[in-house]
Length: 83
Image (cartoon, rainbow, N blue to C red; front, side, top):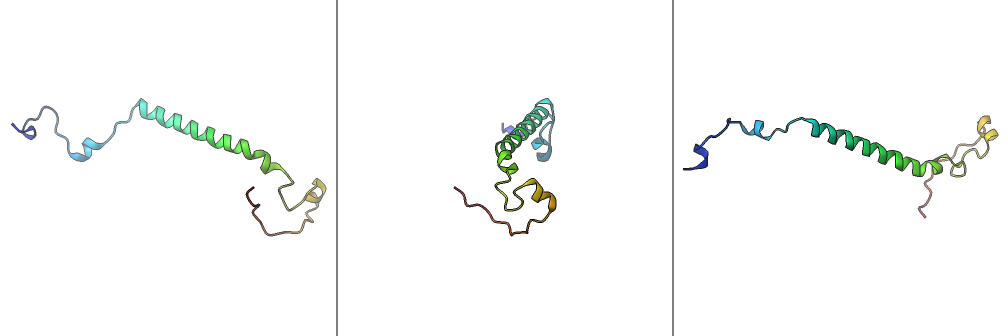
């Protein structure tokens, strides 16, 4: 006898059969992946935070007094060549 004629359980349409279930495992996967993504972003920021805070990397004010006066001429943004 063909398998289509024997029904041993509830009959579901295709959309209902393909839907996943929410449970604790889905919750923990979402929590762990969010924590890992935050850790990766924080780690990447931590590695480059020293470069972002240096005054030497800017073309603007090089001293605190110059920055407070606001007398630094504006210059177009330039990207440093990769080394």
